[in-house]
Structures are given as structure tokens and as C-alpha cells.
Image (cartoon, rainbow, N blue to C red; front, top):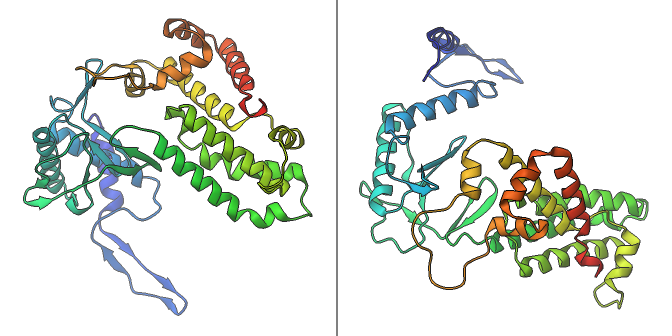
Length: 336
């Protein structure tokens, strides 16, 4: 793996013949030996686990395996973050083979793959869901890194879920928002710092349609009306609410700003995984019917430029910052 031998020797000496003692209210216990493992809170813990996982994946041979999903000619069969590992394949046989290899090599390294916690998500029904005689749960969606991933790759469920989490955050702030000892400006800043970020978590990967835009607008106006203690039965226009709150940018503008900053980030990188997955094309033919809205379509729509022109625009940082500011401030759907 390219790690010098003296580092292995250093790590071995750090964790060889470990002993520990427990301090309680009644004193301390006797010293006892620690069989294996890294002490909790050690800064080396995540790095050592990543090295361990990389060692296992190299033994499996995922880098050279032909199984996986091909995007722009690159074969992608695994995504890893900490101890969460996602395996991808185009057929049931390939996926079953990958899981079996990972389980066998993990066992050789002293790690155990828990089949009961393993889930399978497919775009079409699965006939056989058994791995080495054990049933694997098949799901249509799951939570990964705090975001909901669905089998149809639709962002509407995740956006709806984020809006519900935002309403829950507003409910937790109810005592603060009803307090008459806190100024309106402070309440607005609290909502922007503690409620809106919950809604916009992971929004840089969203594909937003008109229906989702209306929902985000309705949520933002609901927040401002809740701050002003204006019930929905009061005949008061949205324009008057916004004039009193004076938000510097709408929620849709914040989402759009985050997406454009992320687009600038991946465009500046070399041919990395994020860039390939966002801008690449998958092999094969798409289904019949009207094509779905793509993530890139939203960037092209708001900028009014082609992908070739945007590649040139992202090369100039100052120009791109100005473009992001101009596009973000122009999203005044709430004011119309």
C-alpha cells in the first residue's frame, strides 16, 4: 500500500501489550490487559480503520474487477465513507459475487460483515436475495450520510423529508420565537442559523422541479409568518410579510447558490469521481418517454449558458463569484 515499514513498527509498538485502568468514585481498579483495538478517542482511529478497509478492498480486487456501473467509460463498483461501504453492480450475480468476496476477505482480516444489517436496493425486482444462505433485506430507499437515497433517484422524497425536519426545528424554537424580549432581527438570524441549514443539507445534489420550488417557498413563508405570529387565516399578503422581514435572499436562492458553488468546485478538479458522476453519461439506452430533468439542466437553465461556456467561466474565480451573486439575487420568486 506504499506505507513505510517503520510506520508499521511504530503502530505495532503503540498497541502491543496494552494495559488499562478504570477510575471510579470509589478509587481505581487493578491494571488489566487490552486484547486488541484502538483506544476510544484516539486521533489515529479513523486513519487506521481506513487503512484496514483499503487493505481489504485491495485483497478483494475491486479496482480491477469488471463488475460495477460504467459512467463515461469508468467502472464504479464501490463507494466508501468511514465504516459505510456501498457496492454497486449491474446484475444480481455480480452483486452477489462482490458481497461474498468482501465478506471472505474481511473475515481474513479479522472484520465481520453483518448480513442482517446489509440491505439491497435495485431498480428492478430481485428474484434471489440470499447471500450464502442468509436472506438480505431489499429496500426501496435508505438513509446514507444523512440523506435519503431512493431506487428511482428522485429527490422529491428527500426534499419533503428535509422540509419536515425544518418544521420540527422551528417547533423546538417556539419559545424563543414567541419571546417578546428578543428583537425581530435576532429571531430572523436564529432561524437562518438553526432551521434553514437543516433544510438545505445536501441540497447541492438536488434536482429541483417546479413542485419542489413551490414547497420550499411555502416553507420559507411559513417560517416568516411564524416569527411575526401571523396565522394563515389573516388576510395578509406575502409581499407585506417579506417587506417586514427583509430577507437578503430567498431559500430557493440559497439552494441555487450552494449548487453553483459545488458545480464550480467539481469543475476545477481533475477527472475525479464527483465530476464523472455529475457530468458523465451512462452506457446503454434510456427508457421510453420524456427524459427526466437532470442535475445539470438546472445549472444550464439559471445561467443561460452552455456547458462549454460554463467550463470557461469557472476558470475565472472573480467572474464566477459575480455570476453566482447575480443569479442568486435574481431569484425573487417569493416577491412576485
